[in-house]
Length: 509
Image (cartoon, rainbow, N blue to C red; front, side, top):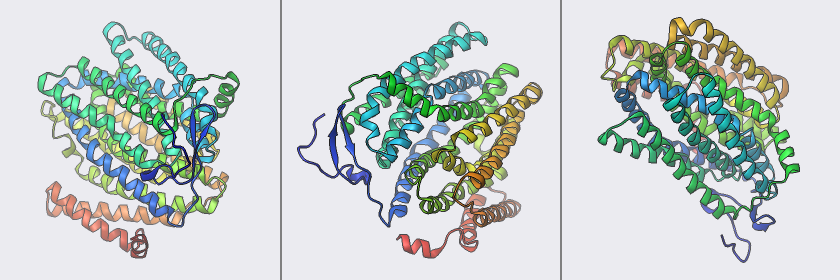
């Protein structure tokens, strides 16, 4: 696309500052912005916009996916979820850490984009094709045949394209274009929501559901690729093996983390379907869907902090400020959600009209255990983001790798007998293990101090909130009134405990 004849302010709505100039390879270079005193306030505005967009789309998607599972049945949906989890592991690994490396490098130096992207983009395409083949071969080896193998291939193509889309969005995050990234983050889900609602009216099957997911992914990829070309210029592919070797060596620690996190999050679903039954995988999927929906808040916010931490690598005072800010931003909303689920989780399965009471109870128990896992991540996941954005990828990899061995070992023993409940409990135990490791690593290897006093106040606030839910349940026994009442009390708890201060609100207004 055309370039302006003279330098101009870039980014406009996304708040980017500096000059935009032509660079070799067909890219535009945008110089990093100069810090401002109000950067935290502005960053909070970016986060708020991202969260608002996700609240407009993703809860609706959870409701629709519940309908899909109810229509298809627990066994059929459990089969799809196992295929999805299996392909997600391979799709994540196919990146080989290039997304995180690129976000980190572009955030630190604008020169990295025009110099290396002509090599990285075709390299990623080749890696995607390679891992698609490996995924199908592995699926065949573990027993997927015929129609299931076809569904695996279609699901895999869609997820590899989603992973490529995530890589391109990492470029926007590195350039601090958080508003644009936020809009793109919900585009695929909004389109898929419309497609599935249409299918529900004409007749939903597992086959057309998989096709609809792939179509939404392809459309989003085309839109994003066109936008990247418009913002930074047309990419002239020029695969240089010396550059490819350089970036692959640098991205290897990130690749290991991605592999380990992918296994840690998704191996339970595959093992349930293989070791127990597809129905057990369906029960777990019904519970885990709500975890995914709530954790999406965290996985939407934490990449923004990853880019911020990376930009402030040599500025421990700024990282400390970001950590103090991020700890509250990540943790506080999830405290309320976790408390609600622990006391009223059964109401989340109101759409499962074709399930028996025993099946609903099985899913509810799994859900509550999984939300204790969410609570652990709410307190400690930001420390993983701090570590991986500041050069501590290798020790984090070892930590997550040990937790995977623990998880797989527990699964082999417990899943055949206890099914979805065992998978949820194993996930929680591993989350506790890795979270303790994050704190130890930050204390040993980071110049940033762990805000123990803030963590204690957050824990106290959660305890008081749970006591409020318990009292309101005894008094009212109506989940909506309990939630409203507990929410109002929680606001008071936040101010009384000093987690939120009026002076901060006045300063930010």
